[in-house]
Image (cartoon, rainbow, N blue to C red):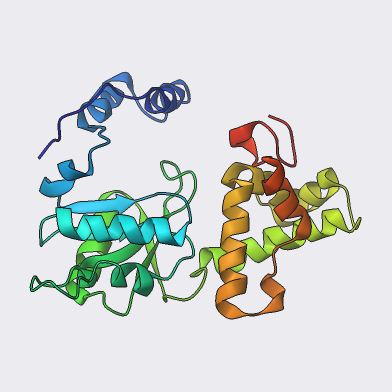
Length: 256
């Protein structure tokens, strides 16, 4: 059921225009996409949805507060998904439980659908169940993601899941190499691109992801596991403190 909509925001227009220019879509398909988008800033409008995907920054308390509201607003059948890349699904699900309520627990309908960046292009999606997540929720989520043309991979509810448990230490170690003088940023990125056939070097990739996001994920990995190998690089924290967050702010390891 469509929600009352505001005017389509400029970022969506720019993305669709870029996809048309690169022959990823047509003008007709773009128009259909726009017709399906119904932006709103009123969470109460979510009272009619079947599936919600939250995608706010990696701030645990923010996610907990949002899921507490979603549990109160959304229909009892609605699946409540989070795009978190590192925060425990079990903890997020627990935020939906009201000890004073007699209504069925929404925690069984909480699941992670971690879309890879950029979501419109990357096909991989991590699906993560919390301790409370029901099997019907998992089955419906896997079906929904496949209907979107994505390739789901299931991961355990462990810090960083699969993708970031592997990716973020790689990026973090590249930053350590830079700050300790093992190599220049250009050489660090070049050897990984030319030596391992990845499209982006780790420092450029960090800029595209957002250095604040990289720092937040490394902090979760370090805090949750207590393992020193996940300690965020000092330079990473300094750049976040300076507001140099990568492409989105125009400055990171590179200038944009």
